[in-house]
Image (cartoon, helix red, strand yellow):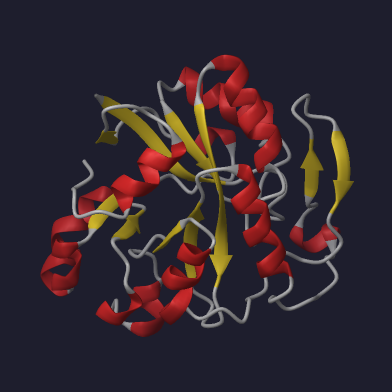
Length: 241
């Protein structure tokens, strides 16, 4: 079956995420847009995933717990996990391995953890944007140790992407998937970077605002839909449409 996805979304826990990006709003908007599966991938944290998963269970939409990791090279990578427990273990690992700077909410934005009723639980005081000490060169293997998958985010962007920082995706990184923001650039990028012909290419919105979430455009084909099946698919040699 075809399952429409958006595997890169930010909530109000990301300092650059709009306060309207609450767990309820994100999941219900995804449902309205015709999506079947989404991933919540806040910057360097997974602590709003619990609420989003609970909302998804209520309305019948699959929510994959995840994170957008900032590596030591200032490269963004999407990390996805089959269940909340593994995502939280990864969250704790990243928290122990990232730069600690106090957030200035008036500059960077608030970082709010919510429950499934969109009630504020607390704010994270340390800014979530700074780099971790985890290198892009071993991010895939490190996330795999925690039971998840990792792939470079928005490789077509001019900053915070593996191509803008390193100029290439090194085969030794082990990635099976790469993410585009603009699908129309796929063929040109494949000509410039032949390694992309061997990778799954996913196209996600990286939405920080509700109005930037995209409708059902991109899909994967699975026998049945659950987070583990999505992760296994992205970690295989099958191709995403």
